Image 1: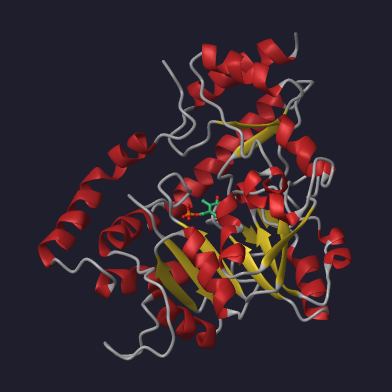
Image 2: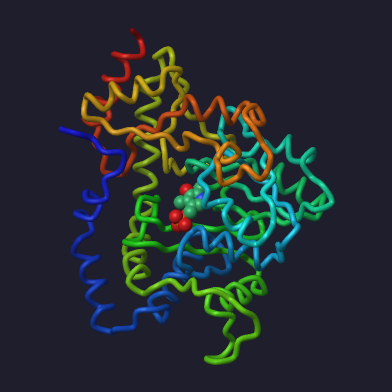
Length: 368
Ligand SMILES: *Cc1c(COP(=O)(O)O)cnc(C)c1O
């Protein structure tokens, strides 16, 4: 018996009848782009987040691009963010001709260290891109204070944080714009690429609606050059079925995380994830830290258990960002984290028996 890192097939089996019907109804209507289905998803997802508006787009990366562009980020601007994330967070900054300015992370939660933001601010800084990595909400209270003091805009990358809250507020609704990915493996995943932005500003919402659809106002009136980043109706139909299950699935993820933590609490040689004060963690990933990570991954693999590393090479050491001039040692906490992190299997269908099996293998190799 092998245990995957995520199991999308197991999830499909639980919702097959509803998903198949929803897809069939789109095929019958033959309205494939935007339209009623996407509009209904946008309304439901805005409701889920407690945001005034939601705009469905093509991917999480596009959501961030559209958010930054709508906020006026352009060539020569600087956006403060972290190196410890997926490149989809930062590609949009470069696409706009702006420059990502990396800072180090908080060693306990692996998200942006707000205490390092102010020293990174220059006269070119326009925004902070906050990543709620692994589903753990960053310290938005402190970040918003700094942002307001320096008139910076705040974009939240919630690609891994569907269902995460901070003091009762859904992530993505605290800064100026929240960006979500519905890549299949995310906590809310489509059956292809999709994404969304949420905001409480109708002005920003209108701009994003226009930009995602060729800068259109009417059918053939284009006020600006936009892009094609429309959500398709098949994805919206799948997402609408899954959204109904998301609260239960999020609870399951938190229950699984609690089980791991409870069973590994006494084990030495492993650092377990912790939830920040006032936060509800979305546990997109359950990430531990161990000193001989690659060896432990091999042991798990031999026992039929998949694990992952999110992410092994920090962005400041990626060839794609050579031109930014960072080097090894630039962000010690990020670099140490990348060497030690290990993502254990977590998905709502993971059984107690499977968790016990994973914990068993870990204990065998950690305590020895
Ligand atoms: C998945 C992801 C993205 C990009 O989303 P896509 O839908 O794949 O474009 C951006 N940021 C983070 C943190 C992600 O995990």
